[in-house]
Length: 140
Image (cartoon, rainbow, N blue to C red; front, side, top):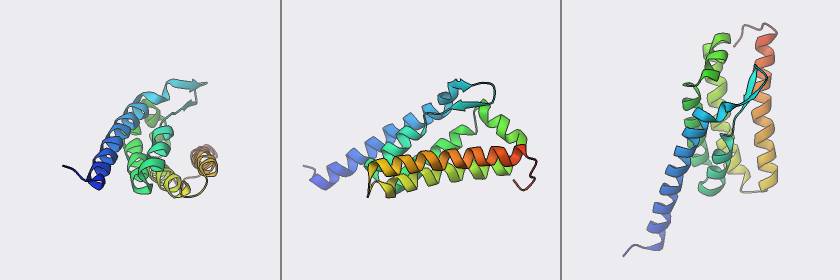
C-alpha cells in the first residue's frame, strides 16, 4: 500500500504531465486569436501560472521552458526570427522560464499580485523587444 507522500508525488507528476501537454497544445495552437496582422493573443501562460501555483516554481519554470520551445515551431516565431534569431530565442526563453519561476514564488504570497505581475512582465518583455527592434536597434 502506498503512503500519503508517495501518492502526493504521483499526483503531482500526473498533474505536471497534463499541464505540460496543455502548454504544448496552447503554445502551438494558442496564437489563433489575431490582433490585426501584427500580433496574436496567446493563452499559454494560463497553464504555466496554474502549474507554478499548484506544483511550485521549478514546475512553473519547466512549463515556461516547454512553452518557449514549442513557440519556435509556430508561424508567429518566424516573424520574430526575421528580426533577430538570437534576440528572439533569448527573449522567449527568459520570458517563459521567468514567468513560471516568478509565478511560483509569487504564490507563496498573494495570488492576485503574482498573476498581475506575470502579465505585466510578459507584456513589457515582448512589447519592449518589439519596439526596440522596430526602432532599429541592432543589439538584439
